[in-house]
Image (tube, rainbow, N blue to C red; front, top):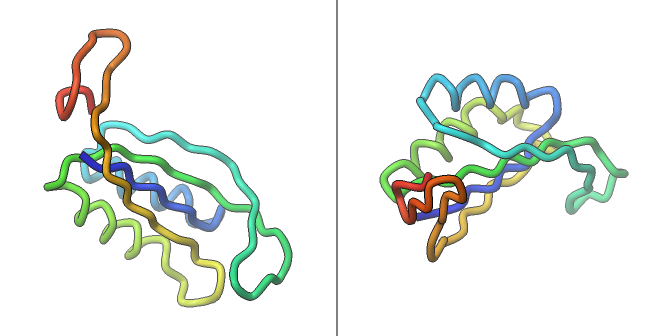
Length: 100
């Protein structure tokens, strides 16, 4: 299992979410954020999207986010992928992939 953390431009957020929904992604967590990158051109508004996925879905999710969020200019954002040891659904007690 993996956690995909994507930071995208605010103006691309709705398009990214629509693409993820169209792919059948079951859920996301969203946080408003501000930040700056290597060019240090001031704090810019961003959206952070967290997605839990199985190993078979990760590359598809990354490709979709890259395709939709890319403008080709500085500040398009980042995607990070983290290994997850376990996920537990609080309501049901399901663990692992069935809890995604």
